[in-house]
Length: 269
Image (cartoon, rainbow, N blue to C red; front, side, top):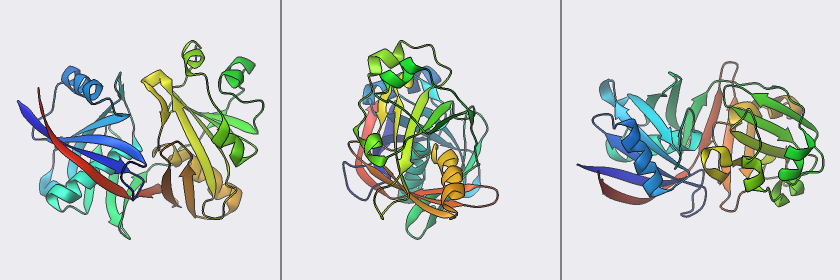
């Protein structure tokens, strides 16, 4: 069997920036073990698989795979999936249901793809010295754990610390932890953005995620409160870099970004 796929750089207007994502749009679900092998073969941070389940191209299931495991949520892959539907079906709106039955609505707003995410919050978390050392951190302002995203959030004092840390991924993998991702963030030192962040997730096969979408469902809430503004701009300071637009509503977060389709192909399975 031959299936078609797209490669999309998300949260960027420039090819080979942002987060590279492969998306397969199929008429029938692909078996999980085959989807996992496909993700390993392509070896991108995340590969997404979408299937149409409702009328007028508006309802779809979506599953996300890193090269080593299936994950419950992925904002940049959902943005990429919406980009594929815009390209193939001219659909400016689409609704996706994840493997955990979370519904994510997407639409084109001012030329960007916007994802509607629930608001997520964190519980206070005390970081042990060994974890700090392995993250290349000396201190932090505060930390919190989000159980829905299985992610630890760490606020730092300065943006340049966020940009310059060099985690030891091998040592991080040796720790017995309750999370699958660590996000470090700080107030931006540029007027172009409100805050900067980086994301590390060696536990799911991605040492550093180039640009992360779903974690902004936590970060937007934090920075809305800190800065007293509903519309925010974030910069993910990875090697590839990426820009994320945010708007906080009473009942949701809109996470928006640009995209570039950089490749199309066929894969035989």
